[in-house]
Length: 413
Image (cartoon, rainbow, N blue to C red; front, top):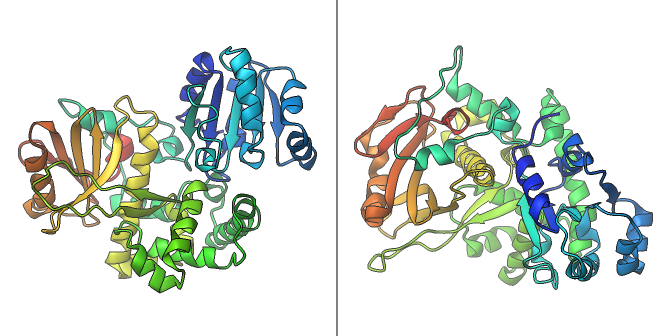
């Protein structure tokens, strides 16, 4: 079994918090993780609400259900029984012993009505995304902490490594465990088709009253085609035929299911006019590739498609690494009305690192224009600017500006 880099975070949470909630999209490996030997040492009782009998019993008498089992308890697919949160709150308030409840869910229950406040101060929340590249390679990435450090560490040398070919393969594959176990492209597409059907027929119906479920795959496809671009809801409304008020509800639902996320804009200088619109990312580039029917040949023929998919890939790798980094930064993008922009901005403790993503194999000084502009805006808060590109060398481009291979995401630090 592939080691998950958030495992130590969950164990640490159980050591001092009464409740730990592990959330993430369906099929990211939550159940496999929380049933692993590391969590069985405490002899936790595992109950899943995918079981119809457990589901019916918990809904009928939430408090009685919680009190009926010896602790510690692991409750899987908790989003299907939001009624349990108040019962868990009452039980925790009577006895705040750490590690009593380990919960997992395929939806962000903090977005659900009456749930967000019920366990405030009593629960630690950890997100499990599809596999990171470091997890696939068997390492715990230190890229984020490395780029915030005073001096960059060295880059591990790889023999017989074709950066562009390898990164393209990884972006097309994505990180869902079941997909990575299938070498055949047709079998991977079959899995994604079944996956989306399950999401629509089950999770969407559980969380929202949407009559026309056929609109959701179409909306996901439109979002995939705009990955790494500004989220213009008016334009998406026109393209999809979904009125804006309904569209915003659908976007919230897709975000609740961890299939889509909005990357907010960063700003500080009140004297400048900034673009405040968020960027759109799909949570997995393998899913985006399936929706857009992408393959190696299409990406080679259409550099714009590859550039957008690559930015989504890099953005999600950083999202995953944020969970276990010491710096634990927030992730943004930056753009001004004067067309100055930086693809990704990491902010930790007021300090800033800018990241530009470039699909090409060469880098010039012009590729650092946006980073220099952001550095001028950030002033003393600036740490460094990085261009991630498809070459093989780590190249300095002036004071606190450096170009790195994209694979530095899992090879640096």
